[in-house]
Length: 265
Length: 290
Image 1 (tube, chains in turn red, green):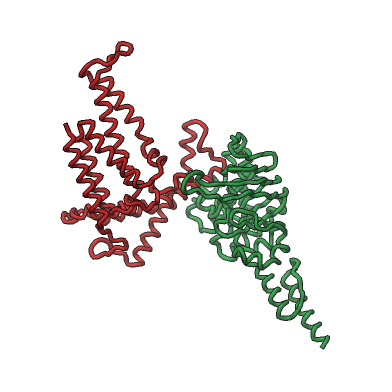
Image 2: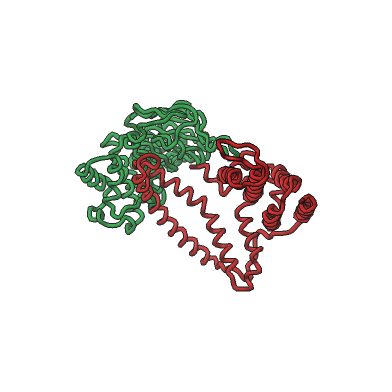
């Protein structure tokens, strides 16, 4: 279980990708997700793939980690591909297997959709792999800033997010500790009938909730004791700044967008 | 139950950037019925070691032998259940593991999991609360209504009710007041003597190690740094300081007194009163010579 103690997926590093302002990263990825759907020729897909793969290489995130992020969605990618093979009935018949005819368009569409999926997931997991959860929260708070005008509690939302993120590893450790203690008292979490395994969770959940509530109370008290005041007038320890790196990133991305629209058919 | 570690290594998250070697070729043995203190600085591998004692962790390399059980790398163990019944582990802050509606049910949880029959469970629950000096009328209360010290006793009772042959204690007195600390330690020592429980105590307290253990294992960075009887080990102040450990107060006091008085009084586990007498005799004797 200790392998899950890594917070999120973040892989520490010092590459350009790591150091780009998280707001820029989120903005670029947002637009990337939009433009992926504009690609319609081999060349345009090539341009998009170039961007995604290039960024992955620059980030120096080890390949296995990138693949780990993709693991849960391989099935989806494969599934959509097969669905397209079966359902799309346009163009010439390529081959027919056991009476099922596979059409040319089916293969093309399937490949295109799967590639889109693949690129989207690669780029978004690159974000979480190179950005700490705290940076992402800060960036979200900044990006949602305008909503303050309509009295949306942006700061509180961000605070909630960062507190939850902060306590994920703590709760994980706690879970591990309690499950070990209960395993030592003869609870079997891994084998046995489904009913028994569900029941085995109770000795784990009750202490976990008790300590989570206690922790929440302690934290609230500690924050109040130190005069915490959110939102208006609060300054930050880590100020986000847009640097030359970010401008370079925007320029590269603008180049990719231009190239994409030039290569569309 | 004899416990033997043979060249045991344990690596957390192998083959990742977070790889960490917690134990390095650890070898030692604990004879059945002895009281062993494991001492070491934070991060020396004490907690990892403990988890090998009832199969919560399996060695990455090497073999752990507990009585007739063997834990080896990459080997599935079917008798883990039996092993866990025989090795009771009291974790740090064990009161965090309480969850039942009543104290009685929580204490009975362990034995019930191991399929002990109801009559025997009742007997064991009563025996356990007697050992831990808990009031019988607490049995029907919710464990969450008790004081911290009482909760700890309930949690310890829960482990004792399993009737283990080996008792593993991970800093059982952490966070208790001095009086409570002494009481709990006396209780464990009593159990160790009466029931011949093999006891493994992980502690930061040199005093406890000196007072109760008949063997001390000092860990440093996942390796056995020193091993021997407490009286022997605690004489080596220099070596202990190198791994940021203190010697017990009594011994430090005697060393300083010896320096000051030019005496050579040796600590052999005598009581404070005897020690005072010895010192007084020496001082008087010194005067007589003049």
